[in-house]
Length: 115
Length: 114
Figure 1 (cartoon, chains in turn purple, brown):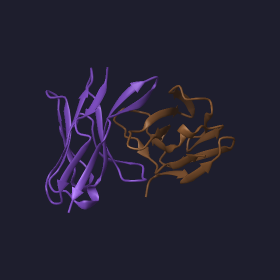
Figure 2 (spheres, helix red, strand yellow):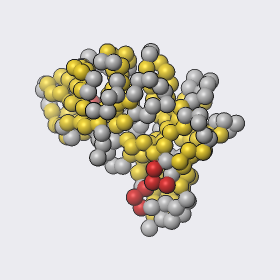
Figure 3 (tube, chains in turn orange, green):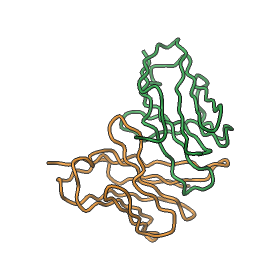
Figure 4 (cartoon, chains in turn red, yellow):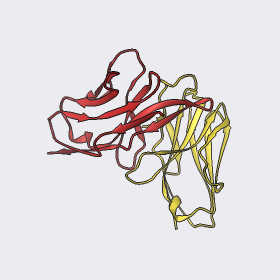
């Protein structure tokens, strides 16, 4: 079975310090993986995607993620948190089902940034 | 600004009302999705349309009726909803061609059932 696990439901960091949001996946084949961010009362915005071209993926707003097959992980990082990064973050794996692609979402990590 | 536009942004309706949610995209995407999102939870897939045909229905109650009139437009018709249907309803679209094509989300319709 394919799935995705976000290891922390809440993460708090101080402004200017590094961010690490953890995600592990299980898949019987090389997956397509995504990170999305959701600010309050907004839709989901794509931060970055992994599609097997490169293991280190750079996204928007200074975020990046590294695909580690041996650890089945796809953790999201940012060197220096900004107040505007406070939001909910979802790790997602894409699966091919019934002739189309379907997202499997992690349960989400709420990032709090302290001044 | 998002490339997927949802209207209305907010909707309050009684349990006997009939209303519709609308979603529009002009990116040439051929897959469109409806999700339901409760507070502090990830989105739950409801329906998927691929080339204007319904390809996935996640056992959604018949009081929700999707429609895809053309490749740019997706509707969700609502009738006789229950209070537990109150949620954020998100629309998304993607290229059909590959799993590495990301879904693009609208900002949603916040639905409240009285």
